[in-house]
Image 1 (cartoon, one colour):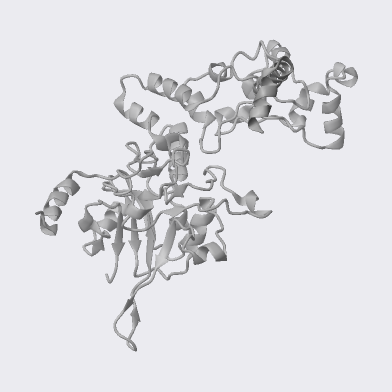
Image 2 (cartoon, rainbow over the protein chains, first blue to last red):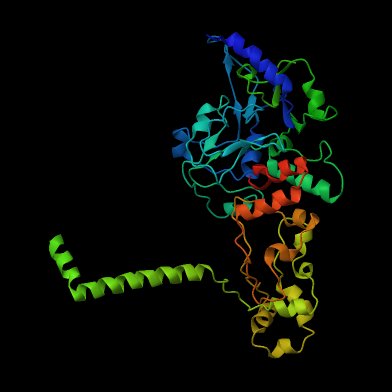
Length: 246
Length: 184
């Protein structure tokens, strides 16, 4: 019978072959937990307002959330640094192989995990299989009272009831930057654009960019020795690096 | 009870009643399908063929196509730039809604004809830059009054062209056949 340590060896080999394209670095030491990224993400990506009742059933919808943990025994309880958690855009994603409708597929061009809304039939298998628990499901068509529909982002699909959704690394911004660069006959420059969460962060705790470009800001930061990729031992090959206690 | 209804239906009058019902249902369905294939009602019966015949470029009225995602529908100010110099504008019944829109300052509510669903992110600029011409997708405008779609804009039709234009270039094929290129 294979043990966990055997598994790890095979996955490390898998990891060596993997090079992502877009990646993120999050410095938990300077994150204040202000939730600006959560709000910015919801506005950028047309997230629904779930409301009190459905939130009580655990149906709240966020593509990014700030996780808090506690250390120690009462009364000496200490809070660990805030941990922004979003889709890790795994190189070997556990959500992808379980989808019966091929609605969550790996983008070969951008090396991201895609969620194709028009293919999704709402089995919620992917969300159950995600070790990071970052997928959210549209349990209802939540109401957007006037004038809220006016702030919808036209570059992002407004999802219907019965569809799974998750962080896309703001793929609409990636496409916009690529389109602009192409129209000007050049390549996309590092730092030219960023995701909504990174843009909104007042502490600059989130950095976004190309991980396959050694000169980019995100690659330079990821070289620091205390970087951690969450649940890496599962072999998911995440593209988000966290710093804590540096 | 049910048996007596069947017995009544089997006699000549019953058969005629069944025939009429079936015919009615069929014609209603046929009419319903026919109406979905008709061009929508526009505020002005805009004659594309006349404007094309005058040599006006597509991009003059739909300039967004070369710059960004949406080609755009012209406002009455754009129409008026030419039409206020044309004597016929004052007398033509066809142009009365335009005159009224300009005088009252209310926009003309054009009905878009070529549309894709919300979950498709289409960008005109990329297609123009790739050397596509307007008529490749929208048909020959020198032959129609109100714009009509020469084909259904479905994914198979999009992908056919994407795969064809990629040719032997593998990197281009990966990009053009990626779900995330159009759906996000």
